[in-house]
Length: 155
Image 1 (cartoon, rainbow, N blue to C red):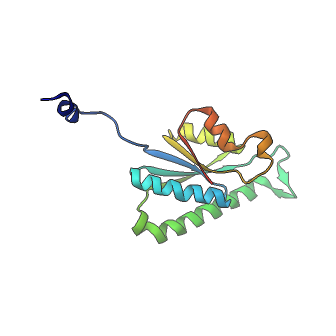
Image 2: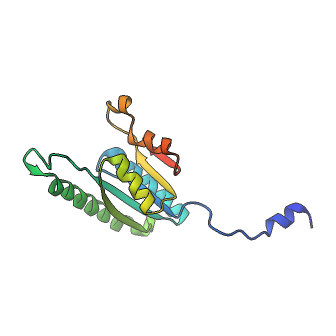
Image 3: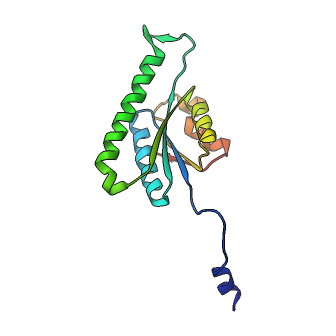
């Protein structure tokens, strides 16, 4: 038996590829493209797609007279309804296991908490659509620099 044949029959523990893929969504076009990309990845890898919305926390407790928690809760509810509707339409084609979670905080720290708590094997986010991020650094760049998970940035 050659070395190559011997290696071919070797047993390996664990799995190939990610089992939990976290996709950050906020309702923007780029985040929804990231969710669609992550859904395809999850389907091909037989992984769980975990969609995460980070509810912003404002120090003032209210914005423009509307309570922040109510406004961000409505955004989360709208995202869940949109995702459920899409999942129902595509269930026979995609057949993806998915979950939706909300975390509170700024987008970067919220996604870090989500990825840690949900034991993410990979993180998928949309590219920033804000010009100001050239100076401060986008969430995607900060996640990549954290170096804790493979990060895919979808344009």
